[in-house]
Amino acid sequence: MDGNGRWATQRGEPREAGHKAGSAAVRRVVRIARRLGISALTLYAFSEQNWARPKGEVEALMGLLEEFLRSEREEILENGIRLVAIGDLGRLPEHVRQALDPLARESHENEKMTLALALSYGAREEIAEVARALANEALRGAINPDAIDGALIGARIPSLSVGEPDLILRTGGEQRLSNFLLYGAAHAELFFCEKLWPDFHEPDLFDAIRSYQTRTKVFGTPSAERRRGT
Ligand code: IPE
Ligand code: MG
Figure 1 (cartoon, rainbow, N blue to C red):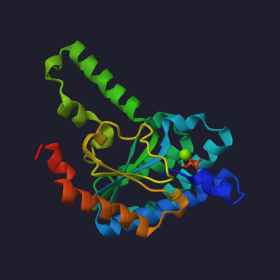
Figure 2 (cartoon, helix red, strand yellow):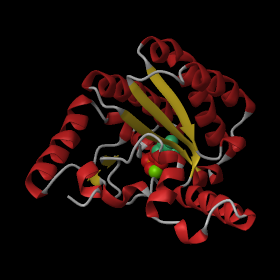
Figure 3 (tube, helix red, strand yellow):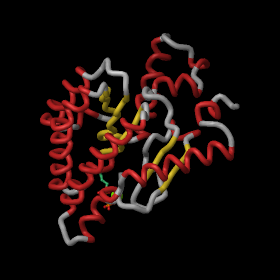
Figure 4 (cartoon, protein in one colour):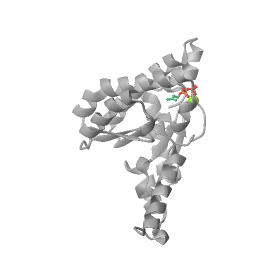
């Protein structure tokens, strides 16, 4: 979800205003995804690297995150959405954890859709943590190092607990992954959209899905089957 800052700057407003509009776009897109029957949606809401932003901006983003969790709580629970968070959650401020943890707990059994929030997330950091855990298990003799393969690592990657991504979409015109879902991106379709995130609406999501459908129809099979090598 990229482009909040530029959206605000274009209007002569502070970046925080862009994040507020971005938060409205999140609500919009989650609702559409649910209606479409998308089984899992992972949102790159705050990256490990975003901590380096000015303190005021980080605080504004954390405030919006808490507000989102509190205001969407009922809708999430009523609609059978399972909310999960991935990333270095220990770095999040207490006020965010107090909204996040109970909602994750209470929605745990929900099955209609999984909404994964990537918070303080970095894909390299995520992979490193899995590598560290596996190395320790090997040292303890709990696993055989020779048994470590792509599938085993994949099964331990938290961002892939919702399944491997079929489509990764970035708004705001940059054509980079910026440390998002790197391990899971192996077979994913990528879609880059010029629109700034606060301007992202239903037709833009439809464009992305249509593009995904066309590509998987013309060039082969959906990513789940490509992963199996079919
Ligand atoms: C992405 O928009 C929002 C988050 C970090 C959550 P940016 O803040 O990166 O917006 P630009 O790229 O400066 O326009
Ligand atoms: Mg940006």
